[in-house]
Length: 301
Image (cartoon, rainbow, N blue to C red):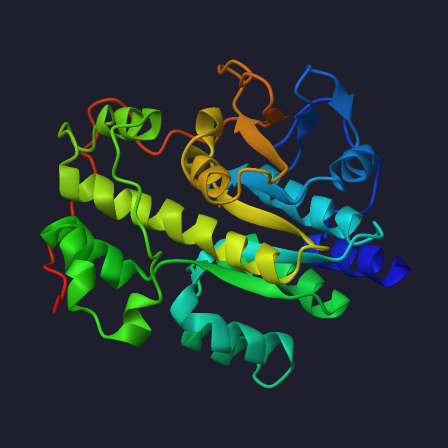
């Protein structure tokens, strides 16, 4: 699929040189398999073709990670197995707008506005979507709508019972609220010095369960396909979160997890692969104030 490679070069404006052996700039990366062996993107694509789902964790806004995602998708499109692209960055309620853009029925400005694309869409996710559009593959708007998730965080998981049927379908039928390793990990996090609440965990897992269910539903209807998912790295750390919730729904699913690693971090344990990238600049120096918390109250039913 030569046109895919040419399109990728044009979109990334980075040429199509051989993969570097070290992450020397913020655009660079080094991919290692679960045994720590370096792989080119082409080698990775050949090995990943047997996976039903390839989850590529990301550090949101990291240019090296986003470059890798696009280059991996381009390589996977050259494999014989049909595939789909799933994205955390689009939500189920906007699947019609995603479909309309891929079909050429609306332009990019309308797509970004109507599909509520992330503010970083043009420089982080445009290459992925344009590759999917050029190749004619389906794109799964996998996530739960943020407004519903915020209301779960405020009122708890029973909030879902208040929703009309069409809106209830935008979130997974079943939320995983057990005291599992993922909940332990999440409850140990701190935001502005505060531990999460039970409702906040319910909101968190509503993302994971919805993305997992979205992929499970697609694979049930398209068992011959594989899926590449772009998702924040916390959602796949230690094989938990979205990965764990998908495994619970589809015990026989074959998954590959790629986790970005910064220079001062250890490689993740097998079976995760690691994507070594440069550290981003510190968002603030010691003593500088934390960003203000948005205390706006969500409009809940």
